[in-house]
Image (cartoon, rainbow, N blue to C red):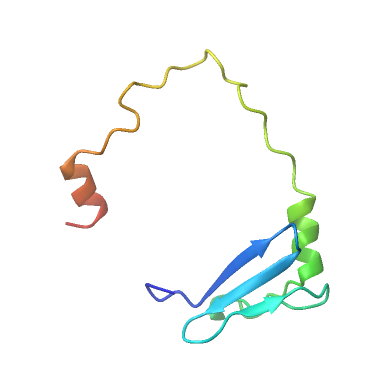
Length: 94
């Protein structure tokens, strides 16, 4: 956990399990339908159970199929080339 992060979730939809990582302690493993997922302090009034989370995740709208925009735009040959140094510096706050 870096940069002041209070909590991190690793969500396993296949096993319907959530691993909750807190700084400086072992992760919590939640897999009971009524287990309440811990949240950061700024959202302390919000509660979400495992059952509610996976109800949202598993009932989400399906992803769009690949190729819907085929032929509508062209990806430049250098799309994945490294960014110029001045842009990298700007992202890094230099």
